[in-house]
Length: 282
Picture 1 (spheres, one colour):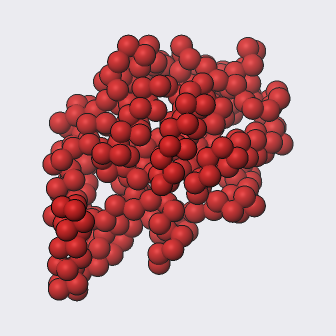
Picture 2 (picture 1 turned 180 degrees about the vertical axis):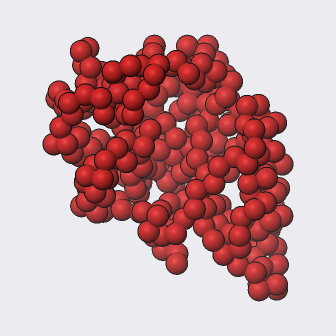
Picture 3 (picture 1 turned 135 degrees about the horizontal axis):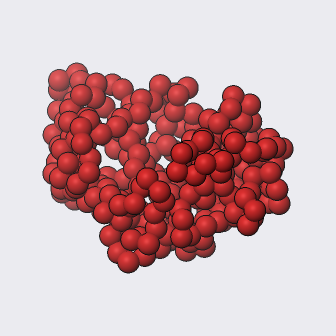
């Protein structure tokens, strides 16, 4: 009741001043890559500011993710299309044969773009076939829609849909075909990033609040990050160049659950929405 009353007061204040609300999508990415990530993502939806969750369909903890998302049918879900398996100690494979998308062991390659830490192993450094990519994207979308009824859109893990103009156009076509086309660029949604250092939880909160203070009334923004917990499982998940995964992503969980952040959003009349909300709002 207190939360509803607070929202009511905020709306009254906006009407009284003639000010348009600022809208913000807070998106949590990579559901399915770990049990730790799954738990944190649901926690940040239930008790925090996150309204949208992106799920990696071929990931090892996808079955658990499905159960959790089915238990929370109101959470907005995106199919986080993926062509990579970037972690050194945990891997996943495509749902399809997709021979041109895999390494010698049958796993997705670790990177999309060339990376000096993984020389010669990026997808773009090898002979890939766009027909394999389309078949794989279709399989991921169809499995997600079959198991998770509230899927509303697609998104891109490690920006794989941006690897070439042809892949981008194909992903757009599939989104339309499967009726999950919520295109943030077309809708004028602006990406928000940390405005300052983000190495510690305290820095993350301060830099996030700094970014929020610069948002303009009447516009819609999107912020994404990857909440998880600092636990033994996540301490074993890393790749060259990103070794502090557990500490870093636990800080995101603290940010998304922060009472200070929630109060700031309320005081600044920033409305939290999801991708799905964009379907019915101008």
